[in-house]
Image (tube, rainbow, N blue to C red; front, side):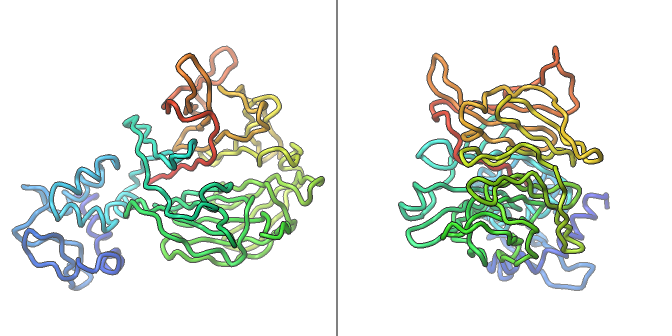
Length: 400
């Protein structure tokens, strides 16, 4: 048995309980063409199997077939699920996404909303756009300001309904929206970041406008929120990210007039916050967007709005170095309407532009460390969404 097949079988064993719970029918399907079956057994043979006369791909052992299917592009999963009931059940169980993570197979898709028609997903590898179902929310949530975060195989959208804050989550597995459990301390204008199946939010404002220093951890595997220790300082309009396995918060304001230049680092092992003086020297203003930051290969990058320049953080010196110019302008809107994200091994800037054929959203990527041309960063256009306005309201990158 090859390495990948062996690893697939180990994952089959470890995931059997999860699949059985998420797809109840799996435990009762017979050995026929109706679909997949969960077979109980010892630790050595209890795994996700098909009937003896019912293989996924003819001529291949099922472990090998599962590895092949896991390597199929995510954009093909909808077509695969239409081939027969066995593939349909396999895709809807979410098992393939678990296997992809186990084998280190990741595709980064961009999820964004730039017009009233709602959320769209972009596959950079295939250069394809997909429209997500509309969120079944009330009008207040639909038209209010929102924030977003991709964690695990979920897209979380934070906003406000008529009487209180609410969170809707889009499931990549089920291709549907559902209400997410609210935070223990609901908030907006907070810092957030994700690492695998977990995410952390910190700071922000409550519904009464109070600036918060509390933080919470979300586990996408359980859908639950856990209260974390408080930060040293309350802050809103701040930004968060994971780097070297730790969560950081930078920027933000403690009041309408007072900005913070210090950063804070949260260690998941010790469960403690550490203040880092002068980590983000750019002073926030009430009219400015939160810091535009992204992490690639555990290196932190940021956009300086006033100069439209990209900077890189030197952790040892606690200072920032100027790298080069953005392909779009950030100064004209104080950083609003743009998205600056990491997309695998590349930095991604998403912004609007007006041209002879009308308005469009342009996605440009740059790989840190790649050759610079004449002192400028070598940004490459990887996608264009025509007739979508020029303002990016929300954007998140999901790697699955």
